[in-house]
Amino acid sequence: MTLPLRLRQIALALALCASVAGLFLLFRQRLWQARVITQSPADHARVEFRERLLSLAPPAPGTTLVLALGTSVLQAALSDVERLGPLLEQQLSQRQARFGPVNVAGVLVPALDLELLAGDLDSLLDLRPTLLLIELELLLPNLPYKLSMRDWVLGEPAWAAWRTRPKQRHERTQEKLEQTRVAFADAEVDRTRSFPIGVRLIRRAMARGVTVLVVETPPSPTARSLGAERLVRQRAEAMAPLLTSGVTQVRLSLYLPDEFYSDYRHLNEAGSRRFVSALLPRVAEALLERR
Image (cartoon, rainbow, N blue to C red; front, top):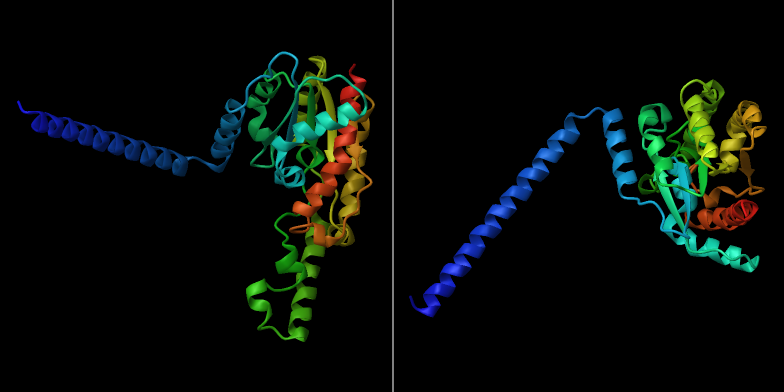
């Protein structure tokens, strides 16, 4: 057999193998898509949560792990959460504290409902975090959601605003704001679903020596003006017994104007920088108190 013929046979075999591998990957992708489509939203939320936990690993000896557990509100407030580790190390070194590496990892709860994930929450503690940062919104949900500052407060999407007369835009804005006031007026803090599960997680974490901080992300001025202060008071009443058992609630003296929000609740990049600058010293203090 001549060498060129042999090379052609090898090339043909490699091409055949590549085709088979491509067909296998395509079949696997279609199978995964079919499985996701047939899943209920709750099952899909559990899958996402478990996959996130599997992507994390317990810290190496001498490493401090801070886990941030929350909704998209906390995710937006922390922005690029992995960059917070070096920033925390700077905070600790400025206090002349000898700490090893600090890792910060965020775990998003996709469904805004801890009850859906109750069977998986202990896996968080298996990661051996030093500090657990939990968003208050996750424990006591029910600020009205899906309010876009652009569409609701400004009255029109940006692409259509130029076509709307100022008087019409004002009337539509007032109509939207009134609908939002009704939503806030009807909203109540839910203490029956996520809260008992969150309290159980917190107590198990503290029993393992984990420091727990419950952080409240600041609502926008628009949200406060529409009645959010009443919900804030309801949350404070619900949290009072828990705070007497050693849990620390972090309420930052941070009042940002609406331009620091991408909607009424989620901070934008500029707002995230302000939030992180205010939060990290409190986290550093909590870590130092452990020593």
